[in-house]
Length: 308
Image 1 (cartoon, rainbow, N blue to C red):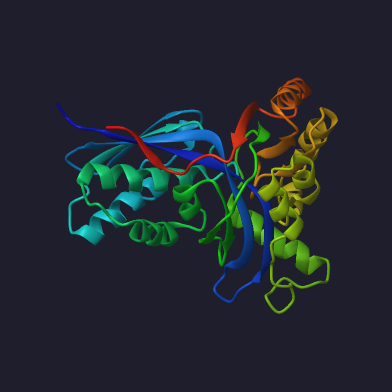
Image 2: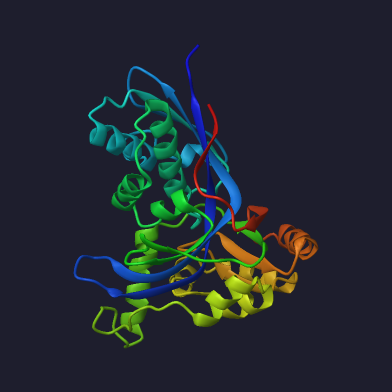
């Protein structure tokens, strides 16, 4: 019987995304406070005659099936390091919104790494897996680690953070996606148009909010709500003005805080407890301002094998 390995990997929400100026290499320095939340993709690795990608679940049609897929690139990178042929089928069962600012593609890459490492018996140390993750993309290392963490550099340099409680979230999924590079370009354009400048010489170095880190540590949802920020939100709203109505609907339904998740267009709402989250979800669903509504808690664990 053919052996398969399945890894489960969570979505993320950025409770703080502070974006520095445009660097000469085209990237931005970040102070990115990640929180993993309990919406999961599953990646199943099965021996095959060549590398193949299949996808099921929500928005599967929007996921590339060639070697541009981050999960495929993860398998190729691990195989190359260990001198083996990447003969594997990767099946991605999607439950994280696609191109929604919740790191679904990054999650799939981390899941593929964990699943292929177990399938091939490469026994790669954690440091090696994190190196590969950082090569693949800024959000991929956090998808591997999970929990809560501060990301510096492009977001890939992680410091784990303590959380004192479970936080309750509601996510409003928008129609279509937003391109992360497009949102960063719009952020730069808006900054330049405002006269403040958009380069590293113009924008202060991004720093995490002490109040936000303390709210995470103590598990204080109201204090966290007062501290959440996303420097990409004005750009996301500029490219997708309809998101303003979604944010307003969630606030009107009782959310403690409302923000665009990462580069969007998914909107995230922090609720006081499970009952309040259910009420916010009901209000958003009735508002007609989003395609779907999801409820989840965080922190959630990072990529891990759940079946073999």
